[in-house]
Length: 248
Image (cartoon, rainbow, N blue to C red; front, side, top):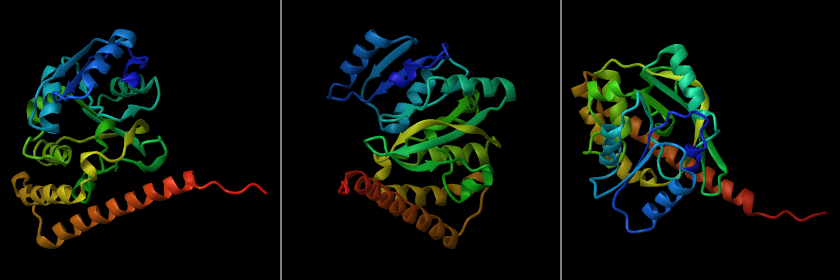
């Protein structure tokens, strides 16, 4: 929240969606708004049908021209992040801008750099778009629909493929990073993620895209190996910061 309130760009509408949590999320949010809130901010706390439903609520409530999602634990890198994004939008007139994201652990230590691929065709091989570093004109949602609530994971990837393959949308890679992305969360459940990705691969024919079992298995294997790679990097990062070398 602080990374939003501290943005130098003044025209930000901040909508916080909470799934009727029983912890102190709403209390903390409203307290922080009262103390630091320098942007128009709304807090919606009610039961929902998962992450996709929560994101869709924010989209439907949003009145701005550009829509971005910043998830729990993520934050903008610099105070002028949104200002840089808006300046790029005004200069280049893109409809869908994607920047880089730095994946960190719970102590803020970098695990890896999440960079968007330059070609939309790469999306068929992997999800090369960090959601929290994505900025879309709201009209894209009006034309192509919202995030699918049938997906407990990979709902953003399904949306990217849908708007690329069916909506003929193209993204512009922004030449800078915008967010720190906290590793873990729902996406850390690799087996569940693989099941939803397989479901999505079977759905690609609806997007006028052919696939076969070989490429489906190759795709899922790549995702599985990458998840193992990230877990190993996270463990190595913890070990490197926990070992105290003797002073000679």
